[in-house]
Length: 259
Length: 278
Ligand SMILES: Nc1ncnc2c1ncn2[C@@H]1O[C@H](COP(=O)(O)OP(=O)(O)O)[C@@H](O)[C@H]1O
Ligand SMILES: [Mg+2]
Image (tube, rainbow over all chains, first blue to last red; front, side):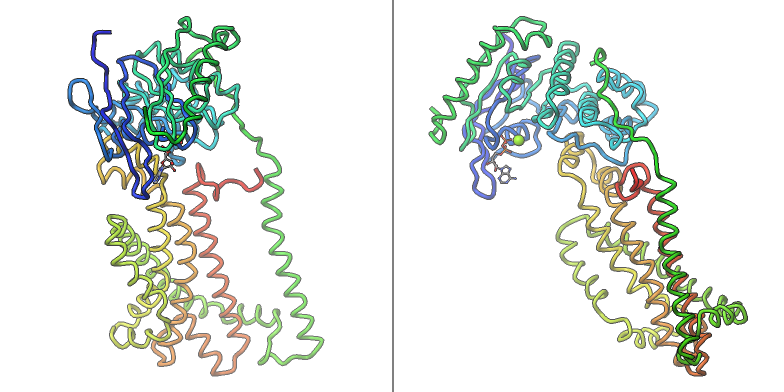
């Protein structure tokens, strides 16, 4: 508790050239090793916030402060987009090799590490397949492997499983949790599903739209380690109800300026 | 994630593929024979004189007797076509890469590529032939002018076609400009470039022939176009048709070869190169 957060934002704001006020006065701190879910309706600025945290866009107001001062170096942040966005011309192994390749590692040098992450995401044996030969869930696994290959301190995921069917999504949720426990990295997971947020996260930050801001932050005290069975328990249902209510409350005051 | 099995791979069985291939080959050939048969019949039935419309059998006969000299001329035309296409690939590719470096450069250069494209070749061919004292070189330049644009336009589009998220990924990993170009933009541009190449292949041949027509009136060139002109003057219509036939065959062959190259290069990943029967 005493250790400072891994990063925190200071009155972060972002206004697009079109005039859209996507984020206003966002204050968010994330602890080292935390699994945080960002929950909110679509269009409330979740992707924008993630891009600012990753340094992909510059905020138009405020700042992101990283513990230790310096922002993360290339490879210290892993990013998983909503679409798998693999390079269709490259094999699974070459797609995963990419971040290391950009750092100057040859295929041979990167080989063992690439094989190890592919095994971690359950894709051993698919190294030489091309993306078009894979199902949607497998493509997303490749995308996660690619984000993990540099051993990032922070993993940012932007609604990564939104396009997948429910069974695949459940399995990827379970597997993401075991990855998080094994690797101990900090995870920021954007979703618009209450159930997904509650199942995965230790804390759920609820965002409200126009302009996007953090409306509430709710700890989720469910027994660890979590597994698939949890989804059918009464405690899980109660936690989902709490988060749903909080979300509904923020949606009701939609349009008001942050309190 | 090691505990769970990966989701099922789709892996479609390759079936009915032979069938499809056969159909794609037989359909146009069958249609061709039907057409030739009707032509032959019409020429005989209406007793059309050969200087108006020679029968296919007479054209085939002429091809047999004059084939060697016509093929030699075709060789010259094809050489000019190949040189022009090569130059179009080299200079077109370079220009596209240059324009990909900045929007300003693209905005500055692209209109001039368009000017080259919209200027009718027959209008500037005489100028080019006058300016260049080497006739072969002037023909190559003419053919190059028409082959150049599709490659520039398509490659430029392709270089800008990679997904924004992939660009973001490269940025997150500290990629240099050169790495992004080599590992992202160029591979993404390949299908576009190849589509341009297929168009340019046919255009280069047309450009070479048109330029020969313009030059050939002076009797200085020896490509297939001058054979056609010559035969026209002498009213050797069957020979003219034989030359035309060779020209079409060459155009088809160029298109087919470039399509095969495209399929080969894109076979692992691009929709255009996947078996349509799958
Ligand atoms: N590049 C952009 N230019 C202008 N407006 C944008 C851009 N990207 C997003 N927006 C707007 O900003 C708001 C937040 O978008 P986004 O962060 O994508 O929301 P979310 O990810 O929560 O669905 C939306 O109103 C969206 O229309
Ligand atoms: Mg989004």
